[in-house]
Length: 387
Image (tube, rainbow, N blue to C red):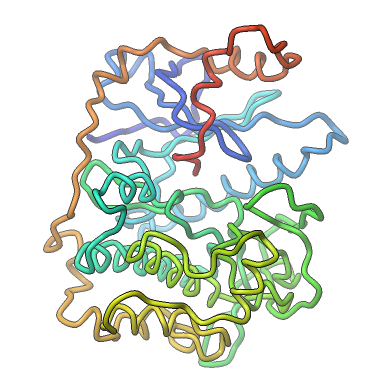
């Protein structure tokens, strides 16, 4: 499905077919262009964020939205990144007095978490894990080459394209780091956006300040913010030591463990217990040791300087025996995806359309009383496709 959209979108020319998901920073709609695609043959995903009034407590939402949009533009500025198979293509964007929105290709396969749950035993085979982990490594390799640390790798942020290959999504927690000059790394120029950190923890996707600082962002600040989904947070972040690109390789180890065993390795009774386990406990594997468990163990090294991928990045991980024989340069050509999306678009198109402006106007309305019927959009209050 070839989707081409004008870089400058006009919200008046867009029709929302349905709500795909509602996340912490915005709502994702399945959309088509009324003029260039009246039959909705090539719909796309549109993330829309409502601007916050001046001095509103949610002003951080605006900052995160503008940061994510700027990062997507950066990913698509270079010919080398525009065609990357495992990172999103920015199709267009718009801004009104009260809304910010941008479009990327629609991924009909949903996210990796839903795909895993749809398996009979809620886990993937080592062969399937190898396929998906290899593509994630390539995506992270490209981000790191641009000086970008992802910081929010989790199954819900990995979407399945129509082709069956994956793409990373949801970049609002990503940051640009100035890479240290050791090992001949490149120092990246500062970006204009200034990083701020939230001081409160409201849910599992936490972001309070940490205690100490170690790595440097592109604006000269340390990467000392405490972000991510709690079961995926690395030990150095829990300890408040700041972080570098190695946090993404830790999260990859957590993800691979969850794909193999159906649960994350350090999940505790509560957040405090989870963090204690992350810092103190080794991962416990079920079954015999294998090259996969060896890979996961090396990615889940507590000391980031000893973690696989710390010294030479993705190259180090690609050389692990678990990937022996894999043609990294031909992943999309030779590797056959283990699952292909079966969702029929015509079923989605038959659903009642959503007026985007009206949707946000209703969100601003006072809460309904207990005896009032639920509004339709409440049925879609999920975060499966937040990006």
